[in-house]
Image (cartoon, rainbow, N blue to C red; front, top):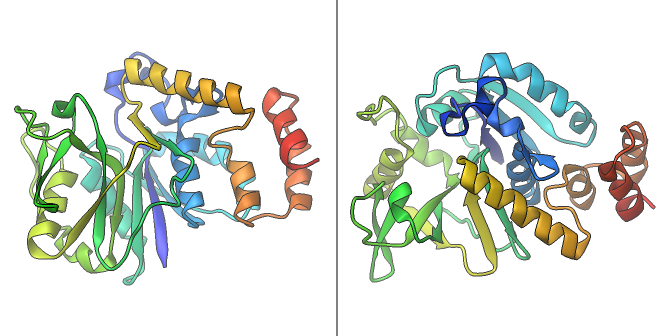
Length: 285
């Protein structure tokens, strides 16, 4: 069985002062909370059990946001990460809620993915896997070093642009590789680095990779500039197609997690809005 984990903690310092009073994953990317987009990816992958890693003080807000979704076939659990000690620290905390043989799709709550074939084109088999995307500013990311088609290593925020293949905020981990999760040390910035964990899997086990092609869109919306870019992109696509991106209710219906009858009962209780009107006209008519 595969479990989904969304990391929605952290300090959000790159989006200060907005994050001085609200968790960044509750901020809107155009017309939906940021976390809807990462949640949508997991649901489209066929995952219905989701672990949300966040701060204790923010948990009540996510409870309120996701209240209706528990009636749509999604199983939520929460895991507390009060201090921003890194992606790997969040994964370690969430792992305590996993069964021994459960694999994991881990996604960062501020990462936006989109594409006609995405995530249907993702391929996962017997090995853990990272998903790569071509960028112009590779110094901002973990970067994959590939030689003769083989992943050699991942370098965190390299000084030299030796590759344009950034590691996105979506990871697949086989249960067999969690035996390495306690074998990394804190970095100079006081965090447990997911790059160290990935390199350890690469050295001691097997770590596959997949490059997300031209038909896919990925952006880390953790800065004001990329936050705006993501919002403008979502608005542009939705205006052209008259279809919502990251609409959790619609995805739950598509994935047969909820019946149209039950979903209609839920949606009719929503306050009047363009979002409610879309749901009624497009999927519940």
